[in-house]
Amino acid sequence: MEDVWPIVLMGVGGLLVGGVYSAAKAKRTIPAVVLGVLAAVALAGAVLWWWPNS
Image 1 (tube, rainbow, N blue to C red):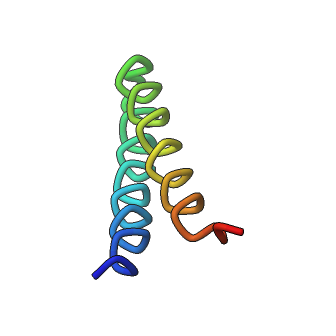
Image 2 (cartoon, one colour):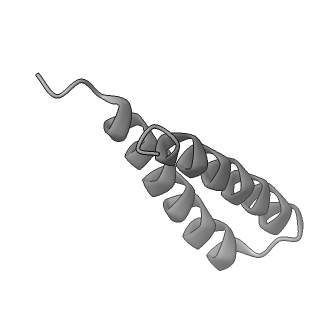
């Protein structure tokens, strides 16, 4: 089950990136920035979860 979480985080990050695109297209800058930060955190968490421990 532990190997599933990075994939889930990448999926959430992808959805958030889609939200960034949609908010930016609608000229909503503050929600786009907030969603961008959340997307970056989710994708960074997925990458760091897969990073080797040693």
